[in-house]
Length: 141
Image 1 (tube, rainbow, N blue to C red):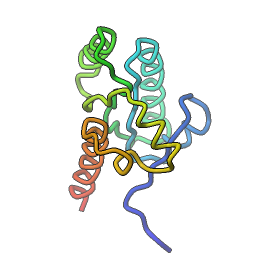
Image 2 (image 1 turned 90 degrees about the horizontal axis):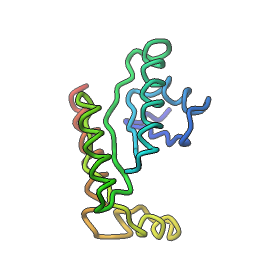
Image 3 (image 1 turned 135 degrees about the vertical axis):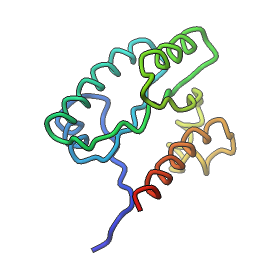
Image 4 (image 1 turned 180 degrees about the vertical axis):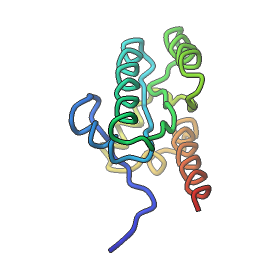
């Protein structure tokens, strides 16, 4: 039997049974949030669901952090980032991932973003997440 250090479960952007089951099985959850105000409402609902899962199904579930995505150089993105930092003071907020057509292009090419482009601002937020997961894994050993 093979053992894995990490298993990534990518859930749909809804709070259905698949997401609940994934949260019940997970050690930690990374929450991507688009830099739009309607996404903040969805985040609030997801945080309530995470708290419920922690209380009833998986007390060990940790929030790895929030990953702002589709960030643009706009007032709205700035306001969303400020709101995340104010509301979620106890949760790690990763550097935002800029909005870029490169993500859709890499998907069509069937390549991960870090192989498709050398644009560091697109790749670095994901590298920071991988580094945090590795560090957490080392501290368990």
